[in-house]
Length: 236
Length: 124
Image (cartoon, rainbow over all chains, first blue to last red; front, side, top):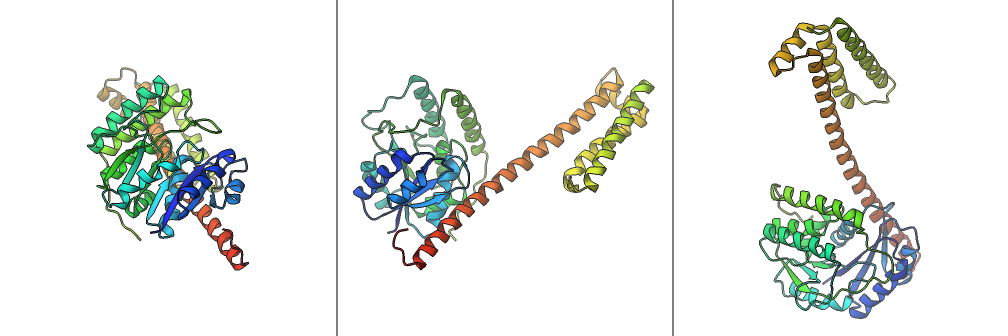
């Protein structure tokens, strides 16, 4: 079964090569696609050097559009499984096994790596923890299933999920909305525990100033999503 | 009743606005489809500045004591609608812009891969 690892990367030249190697080490059967979201450092060159395929966006489109480009690649090239891993090294490819297991058993259509279910090692700053808790509560109500980490960008989907995300993926700060999108399209989703590593290089894209905008924007999007119609999926 | 000077001033402003819109269309700097709502705005202001009794009636109807204020309200409403319309236009444009960038990037990747394999290269 053709499997693709999608690595969205924006100025991650310092870490992207290592993430690629780690995925290789975990499972050489993965095709690895780096979506370079308009980086100004050598991200694309580093990724190519490490043997990944690279799609270079002409300018910075934001994480949502970068990830979606990866899913479009997966859809256009007939992949059955796609995994989304951050190019900055905060997701541990060791966790891929847990992430892929429920998909392999055909139980669900999307698996989300959660930093909060199961044993907890990750302790975010209080403000972020409150934000995540609030979002979890809202998302849990909408998807009618307990979600502990709706902002996680570490996920795996099957062909249905690939087709859905390729055609329709939220824009900036997309993770929480993506969960709702999946649930509203009646695809099945589940969380599995993963460990979170400290960032190797670069900084989180979520700064204190943007946090408020983040919460308001995502809340609005989640609220509207309840009143939206979702057309049936078509795999072309 | 609206003071005559207010009516004259509003009429001149509306005519200038209409002339400017016309010139922008003529010189192809403004597409007709985006000019329509501005034209409507200019015409409505012109209409109420010339037909002063109608403005008085409208002010009466919605409970505005000073008729020129009604002119102001009507103009503001139209401008609000125009702006909202433009927000939808911008949203649609940025959506298309995004799709184009994605298609371009995927095509470029495919092109590089194809030409690499034609050269007999094994690296992607």
